[in-house]
Length: 582
View: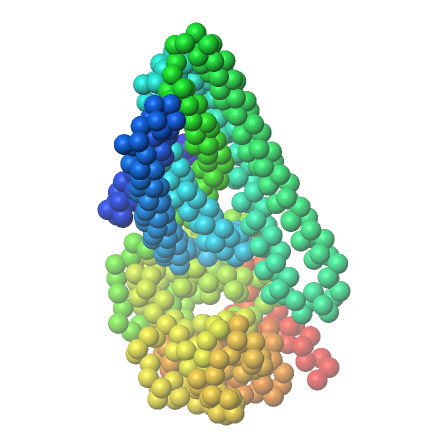
């Protein structure tokens, strides 16, 4: 079921709520725009006296005064333009900063299930492209609406004062103009929304091609990636052309109606002039006001494109801000858990899955116990450990920590009790020390970081780096080997000193030498902690207190390494397969 399309006025009203805290600066900008619009009209008003007094009546008394008035009007208009431009940009950048903060704060609280369905690149596009488009809706649109509206009202007042009969001809074009604007607004909004989706598609292709460039090269995927990028880029071009066609068509159509009005004005004004009913100054003033009216009318028509693009961007940005964060209604906080974990008849089915990932799983883990989860791919091992930090919520059953239902625990407190080391090590483009101390803030001094690195058997290679602990390691630790990256992750877990440790295939991607060093680091890390280990290499779990064999989301058998081998069941079969050639 799709959500109803937000009303344009509601979207703009919500955007203005974010502008409201900066109302003083915005008020100054609006005041400057009004002054600028009046200055434009004043310039037109000076044309009548200029022609009549200087060229018709030859009034020498005004020969210097009128030119000085023209200069004064230009100076005032220029200062007003500077003030309005600077203040609107200041407000715009503040609003953009606030929106990005709100988006990022909510993204950090979104459940992992959200990221299973939304790609990183598309999300990044909302932070960059969509928020930038909102700037057009909050600044340039406002500038044109205020300044040009003031100019138009002032010019229409001059026209009415000069010749109200001719001015009525101008009003005749307003109904068809309104209908044209309404039609093109709808088209521009639709194409803007599609264009933003297409930009997200390009960002997605770029992100995957660059992030996975080694795979692209080794498997000869350059041609395929070029094809994907061309297809995504063509989609942007197609939607941009639709948007451009709608925007371009709106301008000449509106100008046609305006031109018809101007032609009629000139005709009737000339008729009055031939009858001697209009003086030259008044006629020039009227024509000047009519001519100057064209540009603000044109901008008001053209600004609709920016407005609709900005409103479509508002839908996207507010969609992220309104996304429901993780459920965190728990109030119980633990100082340091003992580590007693209990799964009671737990079942889990992913939204994208067609069968249960876990089916009626019950398991008791004692404090300080090491429990290994083994089984074929897709048996539910990772699903089980992802439930413990509440990355996902079970569909049935419950999970307790030290007797507390996980739902009753505050998320920050719960996750503070858990450290995770997985095969997919995540490192940040920062120093070695910053990666080890990630999340610890000022609680971790250099001595503590060094002790954690030594315990993880990492100080040996860290000491050989150009700047030691202060060495920048590149995006996701690109400057380090797999084993080095893994030991940095282990040092991070050691420094956190959490009572519960989750090891998800922590050594599966390592060579024998690296695995030996990492395994030694893991054994040091596991001391005195409740540890849940996932491993395909059965040699790494032989020392576990208990081994739980999972198959198709159910617990198939439980026991020690020796007990399960003696039993001759699934574990024994997996063991024979792995060590058959040994």
